[in-house]
Length: 303
Image (tube, rainbow, N blue to C red; front, side, top):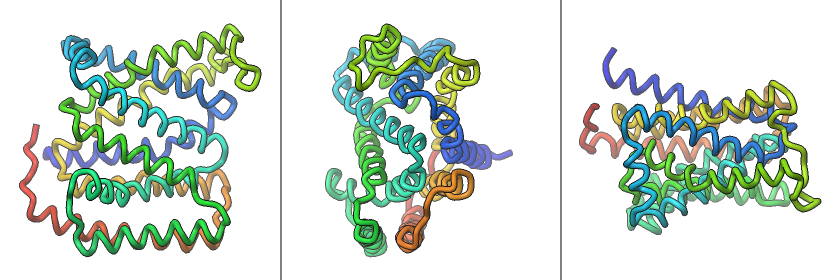
């Protein structure tokens, strides 16, 4: 099996895991969102520490947390935790259609971020795709009488996360380990306060961890659900071109969308249908542009 083929199947595994993750988080619907987020942080840190320990890279983690990049790592931690929290809440509250729309919008929002922050230029096809996506969101807002805030929030936080990660001179595993290391004390503090019952009345809820075996095992597994796809993504990115990765990423929101409509029975109105059709058309246009650009880009080195 070639290195490209290995990378391709690794990316398929990533997208399938992310795309079917609503099933996992829907199974935790009885556990408060913040508690799920806290366990996801703590257990993923535990797994990353094991991985970095086996690789002999724990000193690199300490250096990252004590270096000049700490501010950027903290901002990345803030944006990714916000994104995770919004996504978990959206799944538990029955808004998976909106979450899938957010991750469809993300690649086009990233193009806009590239223009505004990094001074990148838009091709005509990319500009057309962004305009079509903006019209789709405006139409959905007008048709439903309310903006798709969950979709926009997920897209924006993921774009901000990607922007700060672009400026971080750390590999994916090390950078995410540093992010969850910064978040872990907050997560642990929240769980302790929740267990001791010292939360404000509006936030006081019993711990889901330990209440029953299925929820407890699912919360422990959240570390692997977080860490393994990121490791596989890092593996795939070193073997498959970025344009191919970008196109394959659409499998993630597509599976989320199918979970929402076919498994969870969420409402999918005529306005949703029109808006999604426009988004899919925009992504098709964007993909054509990305493929054209990839033909002129140097190939990625294997390894």
